[in-house]
Each structure stands twice: as structure tokens, then as C-alpha cells.
Image (tube, rainbow, N blue to C red; front, side, top):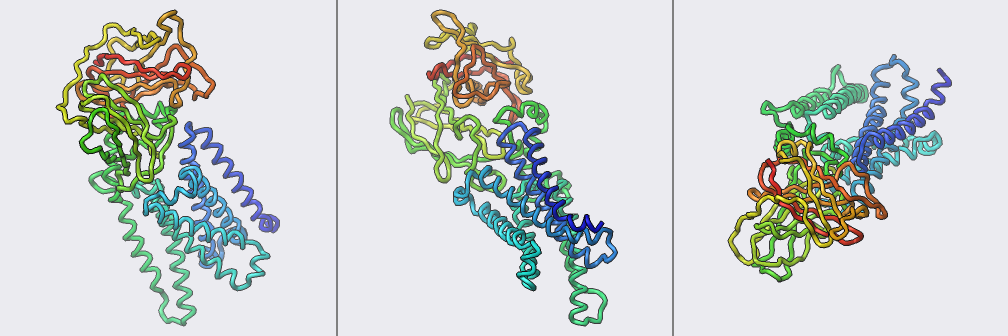
Length: 519
């Protein structure tokens, strides 16, 4: 036992190092997408850090109040190593969040005020934990003398800062009635009650008070009773924290019918993220735009849960923001990419003729799935009209030097497409020699893009090839490319669709367009 006590700190530190490796291995092998891996690692290391810090804080009240605590000497000796482990996991979480999620320290200044404040709290906590860890050695304790204990009491300030940071930004604390916040609250309650009892005993002893009870415990119990009311789910089924309850409940209802289906296709980059997150987009159109003139299109993206401007995005298909532009007759198609500026996105472009245009913004905020939001723009002040194309009887057509055949189930079923059970395939050949094109090159990080727009409702689907390995600059593919439509935001509607395909053959991007009926 004496030998175990003597080496317990080394054992704890070694175990913490192995635990960090195990967490990394599990996330890397169990989570399919690299971007989601970063999020999961940041979450796992944060929770592990909080757990270590909790047990480091728990040691003092247990030591004081329970003199016959089993393995008391072992636990108290290990406390410093537990605290150092808390610092290690906290620093690892901070590094992943800073460079992996935010893209670097300088991006801090582009964040909304709420996020900056939350990061300041976490930075304060990390600074304090750094001081704790760097002075946790016996030599430093002897050198600092009485000041050592005073310095290490700042750990309570670090714990408070971490709590505030978690409540402001922690993804596990959006819904306080969920499992992790409840466990967190129970553990915190135990710690606060024990600390209140210890503090009351200190007051009674220090000031020679005659009563046998203190005032700290009733205050703590009253506070916990008030805080605990936020953990009870409301009777209307929404979540308990008001700022998030509306959009979380809406997301649950919207995704209830197809969450299981979408989870089967988590290897598709656009589906890699939290499907409950919702966003709004402000579109700033040009004034009195006319055909042929250069106009600027501006967009700003907001988190629908709190109104904060969103500035961090995934880049699953090389570009952050895809903008698809079609006219109301659906005989014009353009796929362009606004550039990110300080608080949004903007691009200059020209419209070929006066018409009523539909604009589809396609982007993926960090941690969420792909978002698709539509706008309209009247060029030249004309009246809107309708597309009138009839479904193609011949699904093999020539586009430039390419003969392209489209194939799908006959007829394609909207209900089956919504569940990812039907594909749309393009087979590409040389229009002169009829030889298959087998050297398609990546275009925007994949071997093709398919946009489908309903002629009646202008519902929009942006579809990418599936079950393909991630292409490299030197890789080739063809002649057949399979696309998998999915009802990401709701069931796909029956109707006549215009289907625009984009492919890259040796650096030349060409567009195909078909008209097909979906039953």
C-alpha cells in the first residue's frame, strides 16, 4: 500500500495519457467524417477535463468531512496528478477547438460577442489550470510556502469559468433536460453541499459561534432547488432552456420521419453534422438590376437559435458557399461561388436577360448538415412565368462533344427517392466515337454535381455522387456516375423536374440538362 501511495501520481498521469490515446483512437475509427471527428474530439476531451477537475475539487471536502474515508491517503496524494490531468485534457480541448474548429487564433476576432465572451471565460480557466499544473510539484510547494495554498485556491475560479463557458457554448447544454446536464447537476450538487458544510464548520470554529449549524448550506440548497427547475422538461414537450427550445423542438418534429434513413448515409459530407441545427439567411439584392449589367449579390447567415452571425463553415466540396441561379422558365442555369467577407458572402455577376430568377444558397456551417435556402430576384422588373418543358422521351442526348444517357427507375418514385432508395445515373460517352469517357476528373471535390428543380413548386435538390472514394487531383472516373437524391429537409415532391448535371472532362466542365417526371 505504501508503494502504491508513493507512485500513485505517476500511475494517474500514465493512465491519463493512455486514456487520451484511447479517446483519439475511438473517435478516429468510429466517426466517419474528418470534420465531425474534430468536433467529437473537442467534446470528449472537454468532458474528460471537467471530470478530472471535479474529482480534484472533491478531494478537500471529503478529506475534511470523512476522516475514515477508505483509501483516503491514496486519493489525497493523487489529487495533484488528477489536477494536472484536468489541465492536460483542457489544453488539448482548447488546441483542437482553436485550430480545428475555429481555424486559428486570429479568427477569434471575427466571432460574435457571445462567443468571444465564452472563449474568454475558458481562456481564463486554462490560464489558472496552467498555473496549478506548473506549481503542482513538491519542489514548487516548498518554494512557495504558504503562498502555494493561496495560489491553488484559484482553482475554484477556474471551475466557475468552465461552468459559464459550458453553459454558453457547450453543445451538450443546449437542452438542460438531457442526460449529461442532469449528471453534471447531480455531481455539482454533491460538491456544493459538501463545500457548504465544510465552510459552515470553518465559520463556527473560527468565530466561536454558539449555534450548531451554518448559513451556507441553506443558501446552497435554495440555489440548487432554483437551478434544478431548469432540468425538468416542460409539459409541452419542448426543451427547458427557452433560448433554444423553439428551434430544437421544430427540428425534432421535422427530422422524426427521416433521421434513421439519413444516418445510413453519414459518409456523404453534406450529411455530416447535427441535423437539428437551423439557420436563416439575409439576402441583400441590388437596386433595380437590369440584364447585362454587373450586380453585387450579398448574403449574411445567422444561427436561428440565437440570431448570431455565423462565420465558420465546412468546405466539403472545395467551396464554402454554392449559389445556383436559374430563371423561372428553367432554361438558364448558373453555378457560382460567393466569397466570404467579414460578416457574410458576396459576389458580382451578370444576368443574361430580363427575367424572374430563383437563387439557391447552399452551405454547411461548422457542426451542422448542409443547408439549402432559396431567394428570388427580378431582373428588369418583368412578370414571373412558369416552366413548361415536357418530360424527355429520349434520355440519351448530346451536349457538346458528349453523348449522355440518364437512367433511373421507371418511373422514379418520390417516396422512394426521399428515403434514398433510388438512384439517378449518368453514363457519358464520346459523341463522335461512342467510346466511354473513363477519365472524368474531380469537379469541386467530387465527380459530378446534380441539381434538380421542380417546375411547379421550384423545390430544389442538390445531389452528389455517393459510394465513391474521395477523389484526388490525379484520379479518374467514368463512364457512369450515380447520384442519390435524399429527402434531407422533408419528402421529395412528385412532379416534373429539370435535372442539371455538371461534369469535368480533362479540365473542361460541361453541363447537361434533362427533364424527367417523378411520380
